[in-house]
Image (cartoon, rainbow, N blue to C red; front, side):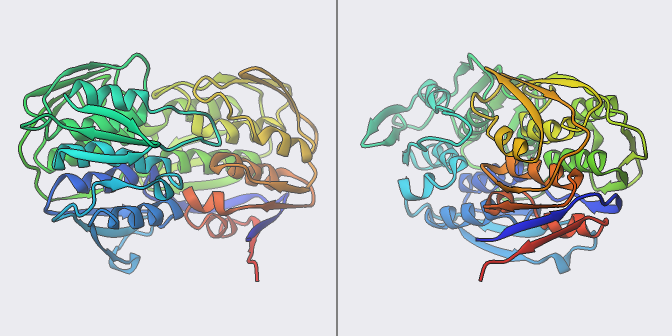
Length: 431
């Protein structure tokens, strides 16, 4: 199993290209099931999760071809995917596939809407919380589907004549349920209104792509989405937006290590709250023609207090990265996690490096220390593992991160991007 080794103390200087957003690429790939025509997606990141979803979608009959990066003139442009689901050959998403990737549960809406029937395994447990699918099922029932749970599978059957538009009010914000119901509603008869919809930029990106495919969607970027259903969607060409979580991660890494880095291809508008919080730590953040420039030269790290919130609030996917930075702050910081009930697993690993963190329910209190010291640590999930990279950049001596396959799920060429800016980081490949 691969590991990553970091010797801390090196400042970061240079340019880091930002990849396409994983959290947009995955539902965009799933949206290809809505049409028999070709959907071309540009700027798709080369990640383990993307590759796994490609395998899952092929199980349903998707034909996928990929153009390499050499065909793209910009250094931050990823691969180009051509996806064609002319025929859905299997309406079942089996447990052995869904269990490996929770987002694959989102095939429920597109397959149900297009084929009138879907059988999708319940995704089961999750490392960062239970994340139930009740809101997904509530939405499908509202669209007229008959829902049954049989042997750990959701069996959904559309009424005769197909799904019907409805008014759906989510009792709480859910990114996954918004994606699933939005996609299903594009092929439902009549108007669907989704209230209290998630507002994350990745949902807006998927909605914009659906519009290119022939859907009529109003309210993109707001908490109320109005979808006029159509009998058929067409092919389209769409470019995946830049990854705001990767952008924020590298911004926090520069703040931690010190230095001056341009995050090329990044969009400041996608993470205003996180960058505002970073600026409060004493780090300079400036928009440039090509992206975002992050600078911290000399001064200490100011402590801050935040709580995670749905967009446009501070993202839960950057909570661990901020915590790593705050371990070296000149004072005490407080972070409250309001999205996932079990997203503090990185705390015990940061403590191995010398961090002083106390947990009280959903709140972490971080007392900054003068120095972190390198140690062997274990990645527990995607965002937790990258927080250990940030801590390792600050730590004295060598930090070795085990189980880095978590990193490969969501960060493209992380060690290469950091090493080109001066970090002493390398991947130790297992024999």
